[in-house]
Image (cartoon, rainbow, N blue to C red; front, side, top):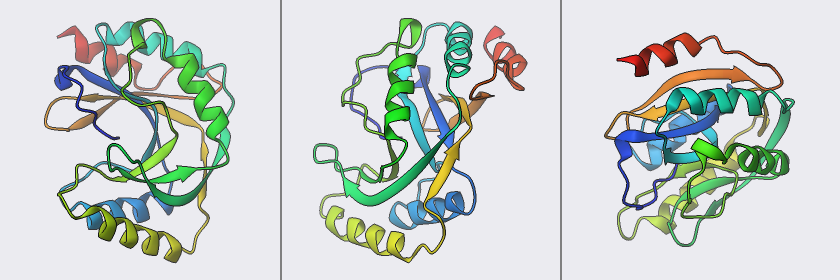
Length: 196
């Protein structure tokens, strides 16, 4: 997840992601830590970038209802690129980007609507908030490592996870649900977490 500099309370920050499967996930987690040693986020593609949510239970209900309308689909990642304004190093999404854009548009309504700083671009973040002078070297290293990855560079988006930033970029999984199905194995935990 990239972080935008918008002035809002990040402890009330929620996002919707789909985690990548193995062996892709472990490879990208290791690469991310090689590029940014203090980063411990799990490899994922973001469907809803971080945003404040006033009623998480209501937002989760809307997410479940919307996600149930989408069938699982394949995503194929292409090359390593850099966002020009934020200097975020990422892997671009080729196949599957239309589906991700449709899901993003369908989800970003009502209590989940938020004025995002950047236009939604499906991707997997590798490095962000770099020190001056690091960008070109780290982008070159990321391209080298990505070219060395010998396994399939595609994955199937089958479920989504609602996550919360409790502060200091400590993201916590709150609930998950499968595409094309209603219900959640973690819904009770979500309700319990915010009932306190």
